[in-house]
Length: 202
Image 1 (cartoon, rainbow, N blue to C red):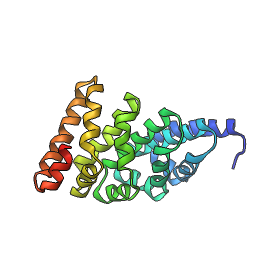
Image 2: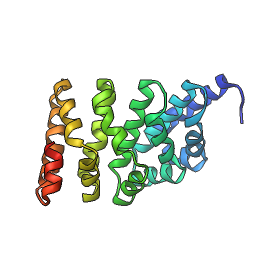
Image 3: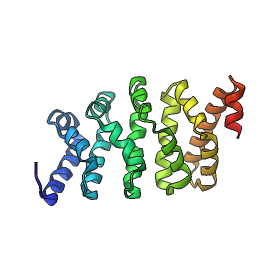
């Protein structure tokens, strides 16, 4: 309930570091819910620190990811993808989303409900390299952990074209292998239907 942004910032930094080692306590004491609420705070530094904390929680178990989803993080993340925010905030948003995408099938479905696919794919084309890489992780994790419906969503949103546009920017072998793996999975999936295969080729 503090109105002083500086004091609130110090508290958030403390919670951020605690979340690396005592994530269960951070969740149990309501800090995750508060951090989710702060994702729309007018102070950009407070938003960024809250997102850092959420990111550290999302690196944990499926139960930790579920705590974030239950706190209402998904619609806030979807908003940050397209909101006029600092580029690094968008990069961290994709980082959190990629961790959620690596969760279980129910969590992937909850993520999919936010209609995030097109904004994430667009970041491969328009964003800075570091942000585009985090967007690629979202797609790559969904390919590994998601369903055929997610593959169809990617194709419907011209994933092939976006990944192709990202290829010339790639400077690391790991990122190249990720793109090729996603394209391979999309092509394998697309072979089952002529319409899907044609959409991917264009």
